[in-house]
Structure formats: structure tokens, C-alpha cells
Length: 359
Image: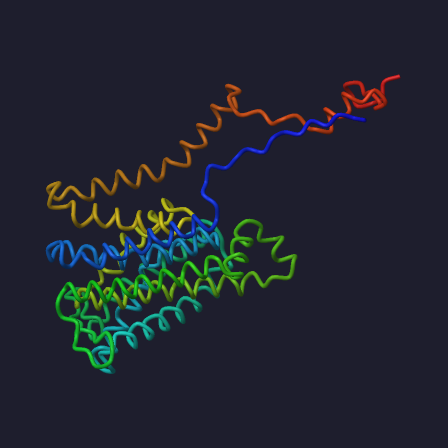
């Protein structure tokens, strides 16, 4: 009987699936409880920064959805945030002060524009797609400055307080506005998680990994990418509505290039992890807003350092792999069990170095 070598399977140190899910649920519930208690624990300025971090986290999620799931790196998501914000402001001024209605209208308007832009942009890839999204973002910023009758121009626009639910009063205090933003941010994030784990998200990852194969398998690649663009725009538009609800003021700076660039950095740092993307977004907002008084208005220098670290991470990993391969420190693959079987079986035919059976 030939002797076959069986290599033992490495034991995983990770928790089993149910225990890991329970731990994730408990950690999420604990984090939400801490975030909900912030208005009673910190001052008003920290609450304002926290609300800005939550809305920016949603913008980073919309960027991460395109970059990590669909393979489309965008630098113009701030445009859809602005569309959503000014749509919510227009509804608050002329239609209704209902917060859910404003948020739905903002998401729908941003998704519509995102689908129209996606019909053209998804035909491009890599740098070309990035430049198209940059042009869309810059065009949105220019319109926000020039359309003074609608947006208030560079002077900004004051937004009436929202009414979170029928029968409740308008949200005026910063603490209640923060809780309103937190509730919607949690719901939208849960929706993004479901989208990531759905069949639609799986198809998008397949398109990002091997677009030609997905097209050959009969998947309508362009249609799926346009839908992904519309969903990302809807999330950004909802974030814009929450910006208007949290700060009661809008300006063209809310949709500027630096906002979209920060969202892309957070998406790159987070990779395919939604949690890591949110943490990166919160960290960037803390550096930008909260650390500015502490560092003597040198926060842009800190952000520049963050940009450099993010830009050099792929080069650093590639350098490590190159050094490991050149020094031979990479783990060697275990021998093929079939080779071991042939070596121990006297009846197996022997081969010389060029593959011919030895006589």
C-alpha cells in the first residue's frame, strides 16, 4: 500500500462563528450606548465635532462602497453630499420640516444624479474614472458658489431645524440634533452592511476582481456599476441631509475637494472593512477639527502626514514582500502529497529531471 503523507491543518485561533457574531453584536450595542450618552458627558463643541464625524463617516462609507466593493475609486462624493444637503434645505424652507421626508428627498435627488453621472463614468476605469468624478465634484462646488438665489453662495445658507417625528418639536439643541444624526447614521450603516453581504455586493466584488469573466458569465456589468454608483450617491446625499440637520447651516466648503479627498483617504485606510473605514473617518475629523486648537492651527500639516502615510503603505508592503522573496524568508509550501506517495511506492515509474521515465 502506498504511504500518503497527510499534512495537519493549522488550528484557527479565531472564535467560532456564533461566538464571533455575539461578540460583534455586544460590541456594537456597547458602542452605540456610549455614543448615545455623549450629550450628557461632554461639552457642546465635542458634540458638534461628533456630529460632523458621523456625517463624514457616512460619506466615507459611500466612497468605500465604490472603491472597495465595485473597484471604482472616486474623488467626487462631496458633490452628492452637497446635492443632498441643498435638497434637504430647500424642502425645509418650502415644503416640510419633517426630517425623514427631507432625508428621503435628499437621497433620491443624489441617487438620480449619481445614476446619470454613472451612465457615463462607469464606462471609464482607473485614472479616467477618477478624473471624471473630480470634474463632477468641482462642477458641483462651482454651482454652489454661483447659484446664490438657491444656495446662498459663499455667504452660506441657514437651514430651519428639522422635526424628527410627527408630534415632536423641532430639533434646536446641539445634543438632540446629534442624537438625531446618530440614529439615522446607525440605520444607514446597517443598510450598507446588508448591501455588502447581499448578492448585489457579491456581484460587484466579482466585477472588481475579474470584470471580463463576470461579463462572459452573463452579468450586466454596466447596469450593476450604475446601480452601485446610485446607491453610493444616495448614502452621500443622506449624509448631506444630516449635515443640514446637525449644523443648521450650509456653505460650498461642505462639498469641497478636501472633503472628497478625505473620504477617499478614509476608504483606502479602511479597505474592505466597514468598521475600519468608520474609525478612519472619525480619526480624520478629530485631527481636522478637534486637534486644530491644540496644535495651534497646524491640523493641515497633520492631515498631510496622514496622506503621506496612506500613500506609502502599498509601497511599504511591496518592499517587504520583495525583501522576503530575495532573502528566502517566505514560508515554503509543504511538499505535494502525490510526490511523497510516488517516492514511497516501489512500483511507481521513476522520472529523470526532464520528465522522461527512467529506464
